[in-house]
Length: 52
Image (tube, rainbow, N blue to C red; front, side, top):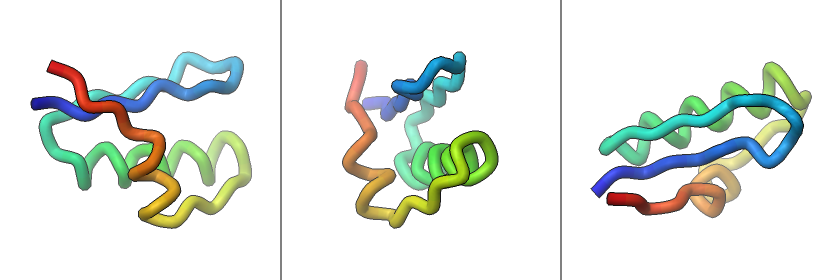
């Protein structure tokens, strides 16, 4: 099972990994650096899709 997030904004950010914590960390960093947003772990987790 893998986890992925693709940014819904107009950029090409996408992260996919088998490690959910890694995906959450990258999503939080991207949100802060590119969109000036601070996401909680819960908010980042809600954005994750499980893929095969």
